[in-house]
Image (cartoon, rainbow, N blue to C red; front, top):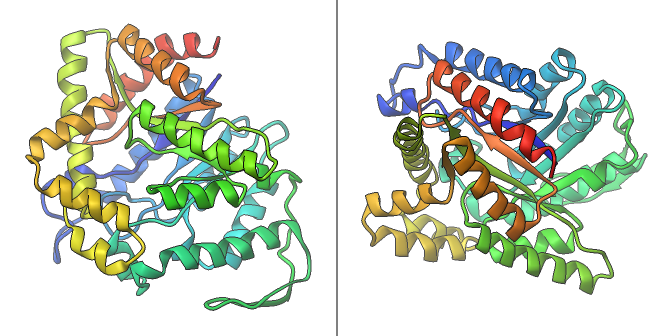
Length: 367
């Protein structure tokens, strides 16, 4: 089994000091971003086989506005590495430009390496507002943009008349090098309706670090049930997790929990997951609205403890025990590890990556 490294690009230091507020300073942003790239390079040197980048805008929750551009750096810096996005948020992007960027990056990949594209529709009100796109349009915009991207990657002289974007006799150049790109297009969902759409649209499944193994196992059962109804065979998911390991158990448990609590605290704020009203107003996030209403009534510390408990921190042996449970329950095709999050300095992240590379990767690669 292969294991990739996710660059989360979450600058929690800026978030903690209020740099997301008007007039806030981001004087450490450049250094933070450079260290994020450095962490990716170090992960590859420690044996991780791939680099994956996220997409976020305008807030320190994720200083990663262009994952395909970021991956282009790694295509040249580490030609042996596989690359992936988790995810490109299609409603925020022009679909023609997305298709062009995917095709360009595919052509820059070295023989033997592969590009995997994860897509999603996003759910952060602040990011939708910044692009002047109503959150309630996310579902239909995603579907329209995906149809354009899909056709431009597989056809020439494409004509499409959409509500928000139309093309006439259009061909993206250069043409994609890989003929199987659509087989490496994944979707990350946050609701049952999105799951059902992803399965019926032919996407592969990718899990982001926000649910339990048992929950995702139930999701995969439904996902493959839909595929079976369409006459397609079952598939395996890519599973991404936040991971913090150290040989010193006390250090691993205390620091791992601290960093993950900060990561999820920031996540709750960024997505406004304790505010049901904006999800209800959007009209197409009913499950998120119901969950937000329930979570808003809970103790925040208790909620954060629950979220943290779903991730992996401890000694290498403890990490491996938890990964075996994920393997046995969800049957993933590969794991992705987020190893720098929640305000970690580069030095702490490097220690984490090194520990995992030396002790956990060799065992997982045998699976």
